[in-house]
Amino acid sequence: MGVFNRKKTKDLSQSILSVNVAEIFSDFGSNILNSDTVKICIDCIASHASKLKPRHIKESKTLVEEQKGSLSYLLKHQPNELMSPSDFIYKIVSLLYLNNNVFIYPKFNDRNEMEALYPIKPNTVEVKKDASGATYLEMYFDDGKSYLISYDSLIHLKRYFYSNEIFGGNGAIADHRAVLKTIAINDSILQGIDNAIKSSFQIKGLLKMNAMLSQEDKNKQKEIFDNALRTSIKENNSAIIPVDLKADYVPLSSDPKLVDAATLDFLNKKILSYFRVSEPIYNNNYTEEQFNSFYEGTIEQLSIKLSEEFSRILLSRKQKEDGEQIIFYSERLQYASWNTKVNAIEKLMGLGLMSLNESRSLLGLEPVEDGNKRLQSLNYVDSTKANDYQVGK
Image 1 (spheres, one colour):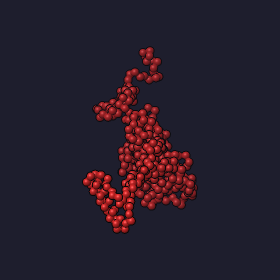
Image 2 (cartoon, one colour):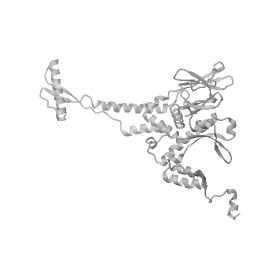
Image 3 (tube, helix red, strand yellow):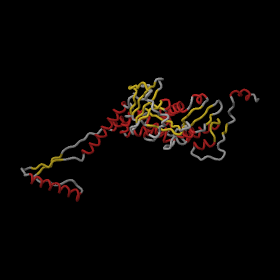
Protein backbone atom coordinates (compact mmCIF):
# COMPACT_ATOMS: atom_id res chain seq x y z
CA MET A 1 0.00 0.00 0.00
CA GLY A 2 1.35 3.43 -1.00
CA VAL A 3 -0.36 5.05 1.97
CA PHE A 4 2.31 4.31 4.56
CA ASN A 5 5.51 6.26 5.17
CA ARG A 6 8.46 3.92 5.46
CA LYS A 7 9.97 6.32 8.00
CA LYS A 8 6.95 5.80 10.21
CA THR A 9 6.70 2.07 9.59
CA LYS A 10 10.33 0.96 9.65
CA ASP A 11 11.26 -2.62 10.47
CA LEU A 12 11.22 -2.92 14.25
CA SER A 13 11.10 -6.70 14.34
CA GLN A 14 14.45 -6.98 16.11
CA SER A 15 13.28 -4.82 19.02
CA ILE A 16 9.89 -6.46 19.52
CA LEU A 17 9.97 -8.65 22.61
CA SER A 18 6.46 -10.02 22.84
CA VAL A 19 3.36 -10.74 20.82
CA ASN A 20 0.18 -11.00 22.83
CA VAL A 21 -1.64 -13.69 20.87
CA ALA A 22 -4.82 -13.09 22.86
CA GLU A 23 -5.03 -9.61 21.39
CA ILE A 24 -5.34 -10.31 17.67
CA PHE A 25 -8.04 -8.54 15.74
CA SER A 26 -9.22 -10.19 12.53
CA ASP A 27 -11.70 -8.65 10.13
CA PHE A 28 -14.58 -11.13 9.88
CA GLY A 29 -17.33 -8.57 10.20
CA SER A 30 -18.23 -8.41 6.52
CA ASN A 31 -20.50 -11.46 6.75
CA ILE A 32 -23.18 -9.37 8.46
CA LEU A 33 -23.48 -7.42 5.20
CA ASN A 34 -25.23 -10.43 3.71
CA SER A 35 -28.30 -8.89 5.32
CA ASP A 36 -29.88 -5.98 3.44
CA THR A 37 -31.30 -4.75 6.76
CA VAL A 38 -27.78 -4.47 8.19
CA LYS A 39 -26.57 -2.62 5.08
CA ILE A 40 -29.36 -0.08 5.36
CA CYS A 41 -28.80 0.39 9.12
CA ILE A 42 -25.09 1.09 8.65
CA ASP A 43 -25.84 3.37 5.71
CA CYS A 44 -28.38 5.32 7.81
CA ILE A 45 -25.88 5.94 10.60
CA ALA A 46 -22.93 6.70 8.30
CA SER A 47 -24.98 9.01 6.07
CA HIS A 48 -26.17 11.13 8.99
CA ALA A 49 -22.72 11.11 10.63
CA SER A 50 -21.13 12.26 7.34
CA LYS A 51 -22.93 15.60 7.82
CA LEU A 52 -20.69 16.37 10.81
CA LYS A 53 -18.20 19.17 10.16
CA PRO A 54 -14.68 18.62 11.58
CA ARG A 55 -12.86 21.81 12.58
CA HIS A 56 -9.49 22.54 14.19
CA ILE A 57 -10.19 25.29 16.72
CA LYS A 58 -8.51 27.12 19.58
CA GLU A 59 -10.59 28.14 22.57
CA SER A 60 -9.68 30.90 25.00
CA LYS A 61 -11.67 32.58 27.76
CA THR A 62 -13.16 35.10 25.34
CA LEU A 63 -12.89 33.57 21.88
CA VAL A 64 -13.21 30.38 19.85
CA GLU A 65 -11.06 30.72 16.75
CA GLU A 66 -10.65 28.33 13.81
CA GLN A 67 -7.00 27.49 13.21
CA LYS A 68 -5.19 27.64 9.87
CA GLY A 69 -2.68 25.19 8.43
CA SER A 70 -2.45 21.76 6.80
CA LEU A 71 -4.45 19.96 9.51
CA SER A 72 -7.30 22.45 9.26
CA TYR A 73 -7.31 22.15 5.45
CA LEU A 74 -7.39 18.34 5.57
CA LEU A 75 -10.28 18.28 8.02
CA LYS A 76 -12.30 21.00 6.31
CA HIS A 77 -11.70 20.34 2.60
CA GLN A 78 -9.83 17.17 1.60
CA PRO A 79 -8.60 14.51 4.06
CA ASN A 80 -6.83 12.69 1.22
CA GLU A 81 -6.69 12.71 -2.58
CA LEU A 82 -9.57 10.22 -2.85
CA MET A 83 -12.15 11.58 -0.42
CA SER A 84 -14.16 14.62 0.53
CA PRO A 85 -14.78 15.20 4.27
CA SER A 86 -18.24 13.60 4.04
CA ASP A 87 -16.83 10.55 2.18
CA PHE A 88 -14.09 10.31 4.81
CA ILE A 89 -16.52 10.33 7.75
CA TYR A 90 -18.93 7.96 5.98
CA LYS A 91 -16.10 5.45 5.45
CA ILE A 92 -14.89 5.72 9.04
CA VAL A 93 -18.33 5.19 10.55
CA SER A 94 -19.19 2.34 8.16
CA LEU A 95 -15.99 0.45 9.05
CA LEU A 96 -16.57 1.13 12.75
CA TYR A 97 -20.05 -0.42 12.70
CA LEU A 98 -18.95 -3.24 10.43
CA ASN A 99 -15.89 -4.31 12.44
CA ASN A 100 -16.31 -2.60 15.84
CA ASN A 101 -12.90 -1.05 15.10
CA VAL A 102 -11.56 1.44 12.58
CA PHE A 103 -8.06 2.83 12.09
CA ILE A 104 -7.11 6.16 10.51
CA TYR A 105 -3.49 6.63 9.46
CA PRO A 106 -2.04 10.20 9.38
CA LYS A 107 0.55 10.48 6.59
CA PHE A 108 3.40 13.00 6.87
CA ASN A 109 5.75 14.39 4.20
CA ASP A 110 9.55 14.76 4.42
CA ARG A 111 9.15 18.05 6.29
CA ASN A 112 7.07 16.24 8.92
CA GLU A 113 3.92 18.08 7.80
CA MET A 114 0.67 16.15 7.76
CA GLU A 115 -0.46 15.69 4.17
CA ALA A 116 -3.28 13.13 4.34
CA LEU A 117 -5.57 11.10 6.59
CA TYR A 118 -6.46 7.58 5.42
CA PRO A 119 -9.04 5.15 6.84
CA ILE A 120 -7.34 1.76 6.52
CA LYS A 121 -8.86 -1.71 6.48
CA PRO A 122 -6.41 -4.43 7.53
CA ASN A 123 -7.45 -8.07 7.46
CA THR A 124 -5.57 -8.94 10.62
CA VAL A 125 -3.90 -6.88 13.35
CA GLU A 126 -1.47 -8.20 15.94
CA VAL A 127 -0.48 -6.32 19.10
CA LYS A 128 3.26 -6.27 19.84
CA LYS A 129 5.38 -4.61 22.52
CA ASP A 130 9.05 -3.60 22.58
CA ALA A 131 11.54 -3.53 25.46
CA SER A 132 10.26 -0.17 26.71
CA GLY A 133 6.67 -1.42 26.79
CA ALA A 134 5.59 0.67 23.80
CA THR A 135 2.71 -0.82 21.82
CA TYR A 136 2.85 -1.54 18.07
CA LEU A 137 0.32 -2.99 15.68
CA GLU A 138 1.36 -5.41 12.95
CA MET A 139 -1.19 -4.92 10.18
CA TYR A 140 -1.77 -7.40 7.36
CA PHE A 141 -3.56 -6.35 4.16
CA ASP A 142 -5.23 -7.95 1.12
CA ASP A 143 -2.12 -7.49 -1.03
CA GLY A 144 -0.13 -9.76 1.30
CA LYS A 145 1.97 -6.94 2.77
CA SER A 146 2.26 -6.12 6.44
CA TYR A 147 3.31 -2.98 8.31
CA LEU A 148 4.43 -2.47 11.88
CA ILE A 149 3.05 0.84 13.17
CA SER A 150 3.31 2.56 16.53
CA TYR A 151 -0.10 2.50 18.19
CA ASP A 152 0.37 6.10 19.33
CA SER A 153 0.50 7.26 15.69
CA LEU A 154 -2.89 5.78 14.75
CA ILE A 155 -6.37 7.13 15.28
CA HIS A 156 -8.36 4.15 16.58
CA LEU A 157 -12.12 4.23 17.14
CA LYS A 158 -13.91 1.28 18.71
CA ARG A 159 -17.34 0.02 19.78
CA TYR A 160 -18.20 -2.41 22.61
CA PHE A 161 -14.89 -1.57 24.26
CA TYR A 162 -15.01 -3.61 27.46
CA SER A 163 -13.47 -7.08 27.09
CA ASN A 164 -10.12 -6.20 25.50
CA GLU A 165 -7.38 -3.70 26.32
CA ILE A 166 -6.91 -2.53 22.72
CA PHE A 167 -9.79 -3.53 20.46
CA GLY A 168 -13.53 -3.18 20.40
CA GLY A 169 -15.64 -6.34 20.31
CA ASN A 170 -14.15 -9.43 21.91
CA GLY A 171 -10.64 -8.68 20.62
CA ALA A 172 -10.38 -11.66 18.28
CA ILE A 173 -13.00 -10.90 15.66
CA ALA A 174 -15.58 -8.26 14.89
CA ASP A 175 -17.95 -9.63 17.49
CA HIS A 176 -21.45 -9.60 15.99
CA ARG A 177 -22.58 -12.93 17.45
CA ALA A 178 -25.48 -11.19 19.19
CA VAL A 179 -27.05 -10.27 15.87
CA LEU A 180 -25.73 -12.99 13.55
CA LYS A 181 -28.23 -15.55 14.88
CA THR A 182 -31.13 -13.19 14.12
CA ILE A 183 -29.73 -12.52 10.65
CA ALA A 184 -29.42 -16.28 10.00
CA ILE A 185 -33.04 -16.90 11.08
CA ASN A 186 -34.24 -14.02 8.93
CA ASP A 187 -32.31 -15.37 5.94
CA SER A 188 -33.75 -18.87 6.43
CA ILE A 189 -37.27 -17.43 6.47
CA LEU A 190 -36.66 -15.47 3.27
CA GLN A 191 -35.32 -18.62 1.59
CA GLY A 192 -38.43 -20.46 2.75
CA ILE A 193 -40.65 -17.83 1.14
CA ASP A 194 -38.65 -18.13 -2.08
CA ASN A 195 -39.04 -21.92 -2.06
CA ALA A 196 -42.77 -21.61 -1.35
CA ILE A 197 -43.20 -19.39 -4.39
CA LYS A 198 -41.26 -21.82 -6.56
CA SER A 199 -43.32 -24.75 -5.30
CA SER A 200 -46.48 -23.09 -6.58
CA PHE A 201 -45.18 -23.67 -10.12
CA GLN A 202 -44.50 -27.37 -9.59
CA ILE A 203 -46.65 -30.44 -10.52
CA LYS A 204 -50.33 -29.86 -9.77
CA GLY A 205 -51.72 -33.30 -10.63
CA LEU A 206 -51.33 -36.78 -12.19
CA LEU A 207 -52.91 -38.23 -15.34
CA LYS A 208 -53.90 -41.81 -14.40
CA MET A 209 -54.37 -44.25 -17.31
CA ASN A 210 -57.21 -46.77 -16.75
CA ALA A 211 -55.67 -49.50 -18.89
CA MET A 212 -52.47 -51.47 -19.34
CA LEU A 213 -50.50 -49.52 -21.94
CA SER A 214 -47.10 -49.93 -23.47
CA GLN A 215 -44.53 -47.22 -22.90
CA GLU A 216 -45.08 -46.01 -26.46
CA ASP A 217 -48.84 -45.66 -25.89
CA LYS A 218 -48.24 -43.89 -22.59
CA ASN A 219 -46.03 -41.36 -24.35
CA LYS A 220 -48.70 -40.83 -27.03
CA GLN A 221 -51.41 -40.27 -24.41
CA LYS A 222 -49.14 -37.80 -22.60
CA GLU A 223 -48.49 -35.95 -25.85
CA ILE A 224 -52.23 -35.77 -26.57
CA PHE A 225 -52.88 -34.41 -23.08
CA ASP A 226 -50.07 -31.81 -23.36
CA ASN A 227 -51.28 -30.63 -26.77
CA ALA A 228 -54.87 -30.34 -25.53
CA LEU A 229 -53.75 -28.32 -22.51
CA ARG A 230 -51.51 -26.08 -24.62
CA THR A 231 -54.29 -25.43 -27.14
CA SER A 232 -56.83 -24.66 -24.40
CA ILE A 233 -54.49 -22.13 -22.77
CA LYS A 234 -53.54 -20.51 -26.08
CA GLU A 235 -56.98 -20.32 -27.69
CA ASN A 236 -59.37 -20.18 -24.75
CA ASN A 237 -57.14 -18.72 -22.05
CA SER A 238 -58.18 -21.66 -19.88
CA ALA A 239 -56.50 -24.64 -18.27
CA ILE A 240 -59.63 -26.81 -18.39
CA ILE A 241 -59.61 -29.72 -20.87
CA PRO A 242 -61.91 -32.73 -21.37
CA VAL A 243 -60.66 -36.17 -20.26
CA ASP A 244 -62.32 -39.41 -21.52
CA LEU A 245 -62.81 -42.64 -19.59
CA LYS A 246 -59.38 -43.90 -20.58
CA ALA A 247 -57.76 -41.64 -18.02
CA ASP A 248 -58.42 -39.85 -14.75
CA TYR A 249 -56.85 -36.55 -13.66
CA VAL A 250 -55.84 -36.73 -9.99
CA PRO A 251 -55.05 -33.25 -8.50
CA LEU A 252 -52.20 -32.90 -6.01
CA SER A 253 -52.71 -30.35 -3.25
CA SER A 254 -49.88 -27.91 -2.53
CA ASP A 255 -50.15 -25.82 0.61
CA PRO A 256 -46.79 -24.13 1.36
CA LYS A 257 -46.73 -22.44 4.77
CA LEU A 258 -45.52 -18.84 4.88
CA VAL A 259 -44.27 -17.01 7.96
CA ASP A 260 -46.66 -14.35 9.19
CA ALA A 261 -45.83 -10.65 8.89
CA ALA A 262 -45.56 -10.21 12.67
CA THR A 263 -42.64 -12.68 12.87
CA LEU A 264 -40.79 -10.98 10.01
CA ASP A 265 -41.37 -7.60 11.65
CA PHE A 266 -40.07 -8.90 15.00
CA LEU A 267 -36.82 -10.17 13.44
CA ASN A 268 -36.32 -6.95 11.51
CA LYS A 269 -36.81 -4.86 14.66
CA LYS A 270 -34.23 -6.97 16.53
CA ILE A 271 -31.61 -6.06 13.92
CA LEU A 272 -32.63 -2.38 14.01
CA SER A 273 -32.37 -2.40 17.81
CA TYR A 274 -28.84 -3.84 17.65
CA PHE A 275 -27.71 -0.83 15.61
CA ARG A 276 -29.90 1.64 17.57
CA VAL A 277 -31.81 2.65 14.45
CA SER A 278 -35.55 3.18 14.80
CA GLU A 279 -38.05 2.19 12.13
CA PRO A 280 -38.78 5.80 11.07
CA ILE A 281 -35.03 6.47 10.61
CA TYR A 282 -34.62 3.17 8.76
CA ASN A 283 -37.48 4.07 6.42
CA ASN A 284 -36.27 7.68 6.08
CA ASN A 285 -39.66 8.96 7.19
CA TYR A 286 -39.18 10.54 10.61
CA THR A 287 -40.50 13.45 12.64
CA GLU A 288 -38.39 16.09 14.36
CA GLU A 289 -38.74 14.32 17.72
CA GLN A 290 -37.82 10.94 16.23
CA PHE A 291 -34.68 12.36 14.67
CA ASN A 292 -33.71 14.07 17.93
CA SER A 293 -33.89 10.69 19.69
CA PHE A 294 -31.72 9.10 17.00
CA TYR A 295 -29.26 12.00 17.18
CA GLU A 296 -28.91 11.85 20.95
CA GLY A 297 -28.65 8.06 21.04
CA THR A 298 -26.29 7.51 18.11
CA ILE A 299 -24.91 10.53 16.22
CA GLU A 300 -24.01 12.64 19.26
CA GLN A 301 -21.95 9.79 20.73
CA LEU A 302 -20.09 9.43 17.42
CA SER A 303 -19.42 13.18 17.34
CA ILE A 304 -17.87 13.07 20.82
CA LYS A 305 -15.86 9.94 20.05
CA LEU A 306 -14.47 11.40 16.80
CA SER A 307 -13.62 14.74 18.44
CA GLU A 308 -11.77 13.17 21.37
CA GLU A 309 -9.80 10.60 19.38
CA PHE A 310 -8.75 12.98 16.59
CA SER A 311 -7.64 15.54 19.20
CA ARG A 312 -5.77 12.88 21.18
CA ILE A 313 -3.63 11.73 18.25
CA LEU A 314 -3.34 14.76 15.95
CA LEU A 315 -2.61 17.44 18.56
CA SER A 316 0.36 17.64 20.90
CA ARG A 317 -0.04 17.95 24.64
CA LYS A 318 1.04 21.60 24.48
CA GLN A 319 -1.53 22.37 21.79
CA LYS A 320 -4.27 20.83 23.91
CA GLU A 321 -3.10 22.71 27.02
CA ASP A 322 -3.26 25.93 24.98
CA GLY A 323 -6.91 25.28 24.18
CA GLU A 324 -6.64 23.65 20.76
CA GLN A 325 -8.96 20.79 19.89
CA ILE A 326 -10.65 19.11 16.96
CA ILE A 327 -14.43 19.28 17.10
CA PHE A 328 -16.90 17.46 14.87
CA TYR A 329 -19.74 19.96 14.80
CA SER A 330 -23.31 19.03 13.96
CA GLU A 331 -25.83 21.46 12.54
CA ARG A 332 -28.61 19.77 14.42
CA LEU A 333 -31.18 22.49 13.73
CA GLN A 334 -31.03 21.68 10.01
CA TYR A 335 -33.33 18.73 10.77
CA ALA A 336 -35.82 20.78 12.78
CA SER A 337 -39.25 21.89 11.59
CA TRP A 338 -39.77 25.37 10.13
CA ASN A 339 -41.43 26.66 13.34
CA THR A 340 -38.60 25.30 15.50
CA LYS A 341 -36.01 26.98 13.27
CA VAL A 342 -37.81 30.34 13.39
CA ASN A 343 -38.17 30.16 17.20
CA ALA A 344 -34.49 29.22 17.55
CA ILE A 345 -33.42 32.12 15.32
CA GLU A 346 -35.46 34.58 17.38
CA LYS A 347 -33.84 33.40 20.61
CA LEU A 348 -30.27 32.90 19.35
CA MET A 349 -30.05 36.16 17.38
CA GLY A 350 -31.34 38.07 20.40
CA LEU A 351 -28.49 36.61 22.47
CA GLY A 352 -25.92 37.48 19.80
CA LEU A 353 -25.18 33.80 19.19
CA MET A 354 -26.12 33.82 15.51
CA SER A 355 -25.41 36.17 12.61
CA LEU A 356 -27.95 37.16 9.97
CA ASN A 357 -26.29 34.93 7.35
CA GLU A 358 -26.20 31.98 9.74
CA SER A 359 -29.92 32.36 10.34
CA ARG A 360 -30.56 32.66 6.58
CA SER A 361 -28.50 29.52 5.96
CA LEU A 362 -30.59 27.66 8.52
CA LEU A 363 -33.70 28.55 6.51
CA GLY A 364 -32.08 27.52 3.22
CA LEU A 365 -31.60 31.11 2.01
CA GLU A 366 -28.48 32.52 0.34
CA PRO A 367 -26.20 34.92 2.28
CA VAL A 368 -26.50 38.69 1.92
CA GLU A 369 -23.94 41.47 1.99
CA ASP A 370 -22.87 42.49 5.50
CA GLY A 371 -24.84 39.54 6.82
CA ASN A 372 -22.04 38.27 9.07
CA LYS A 373 -22.73 40.89 11.71
CA ARG A 374 -24.17 39.70 15.00
CA LEU A 375 -27.14 41.54 16.46
CA GLN A 376 -28.10 41.45 20.12
CA SER A 377 -31.20 42.50 22.02
CA LEU A 378 -30.88 45.34 24.50
CA ASN A 379 -33.08 43.32 26.86
CA TYR A 380 -29.98 41.46 28.09
CA VAL A 381 -27.36 42.89 30.42
CA ASP A 382 -24.10 41.70 31.98
CA SER A 383 -25.03 40.01 35.28
CA THR A 384 -22.24 41.88 37.11
CA LYS A 385 -23.78 45.20 36.03
CA ALA A 386 -27.43 44.32 36.64
CA ASN A 387 -27.72 46.32 39.90
CA ASP A 388 -26.23 49.44 38.31
CA TYR A 389 -28.57 49.06 35.34
CA GLN A 390 -31.62 48.91 37.61
CA VAL A 391 -30.78 52.16 39.39
CA GLY A 392 -29.92 53.91 36.15
CA LYS A 393 -26.16 54.19 36.61
